[in-house]
Length: 303
Image (cartoon, rainbow, N blue to C red; front, side, top):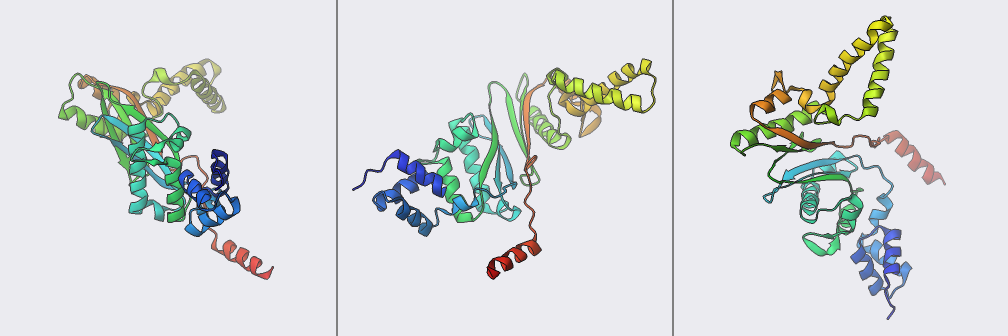
């Protein structure tokens, strides 16, 4: 009986994309023979993930929730098509991954992938992704997540359009009343709609302000404004910039006559932090070209 080393398991995993436990089992079944183990995994359908590793996965969903232990999670899980994203299996997977983040508190996606799954320690999160990729037939990947833990604060989450946008918010209040909870949820909805980048103006990096001033100054000069009043104009426009990117400065979506800061002052509340994920932002999208696919298949047949 061949000795199955961790190096053998790692090599098989890298070559097939299958889960760690599946690779170990395959090597045991095949007495350490790498080629036979690869065939074994292919026959089981577990090596399919490797062929999908290079595909574009920019669809999927953003899932957000706050559990009964006061832990909030927002996570983006990607797949290749919106059809798969709308299936119960994929939605359940997103829920399971969010629960794992809540329970195991990974600090990065890489750490999360290598952790034993919170509900089945015989498998890692990466193992589950490999199994899901093989059974669903599309590349599945975890892109990012955030985790907040309540510490005498109020957490709220909001998911927009079935997972297109997810928000996680942490706020403080003297007393957690039903009115405070409702306002927190309204603020999470506001963040989804208004897309602020920071909570308050003090958080805007100096580099961002310098760049904005440079652009605004050039705009004013291009408009033919006299140089002596350009500086004053730019500072006025910087105030407008704050209202665009800072949550507290923005007009409240449910009552644009008041700012979020004014609304919070009425309730003696404050927002500590928030995170807003939009599905697929910054990722290359998959473009299906039927004519090109048919032409490619015909070219293969002629060879």
